[in-house]
Length: 388
Image 1 (cartoon, rainbow, N blue to C red):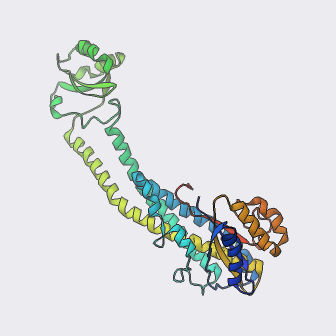
Image 2 (cartoon, rainbow, N blue to C red; image 1 turned 90 degrees about the horizontal axis):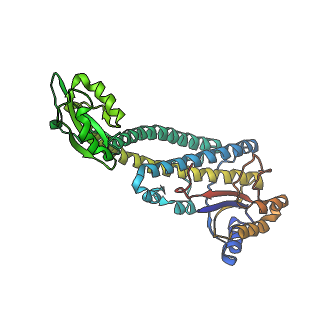
Image 3 (spheres, rainbow, N blue to C red; image 1 turned 180 degrees about the vertical axis):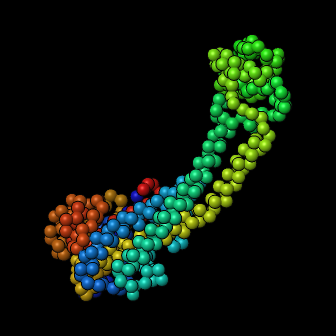
């Protein structure tokens, strides 16, 4: 799992000093994590009341945007089918791989203008991701229906002679056509009963054309035989055949219908190929849109929570940490010691709840199951193995 911790701490004399102190302690001296400065622009603060209300809403938005991001990634994996191993390389954010995007994060001024209020920026993201979510439902339904129809047809082309489509196994010369009195039936006979069939099919009823049965095809369990008889004994023949475990398949040889069936299959295969390319492109583009939006929500949350915790004027350093494997508990302890002076009540409970997700409470986050003396959000960028 590729996990990052997005934290913030108040600026000492300068934010650079905050960064250097933290980086020396966690990365240079103890080698517990790789650290990156996380750049958040000068956003509009608004009033304290607005920030408290927004804090709660951003928590919900964070969850929603992450869900949609993972949904798009999961569906791209489904669409790629046997190329699913290429999913990882198709999950890009702004033409970069996910770790590169997040560690070199730059606020997108064009999409999310910082002259807007924080609430407006959150609404822009919510609307954008909501539209992607709605479009995904429509596109996935259309494609899945097409895929389902094709799979049903393909199933009929394979499988047991008892159930499969027989159209591609028979030829015109196997049938008596255009006769007023005679017709040809297709009978499925268990392989173990071939001899029995050949010995007795002429005696199952009257009015069966002698030596009219022919083996057309066979699989591991059954053989497909023809038999020609008078139309008026069809029902009687079916009854006696069933008693002997010979199954008459309902089949009428009609060249137009057979051609239409083959055309339908060809059309579905063509339609699926036509839709595949544009759908994959749409999923890649909108995965990138969702992922970038998600990281912007994280940035908003850090900004709002930092102002609520550390006060005004805005003076904090946001830092992205990538904990080394097996170092998370030690890293947590080091950070708790470094920032214990910010809130002594947090260090007691915080160090025990090391790896849970933040459950954000509006305001200063009191009562969180995962509360630390510094602002903290976890980001898991592993999109391949996490199903929504």
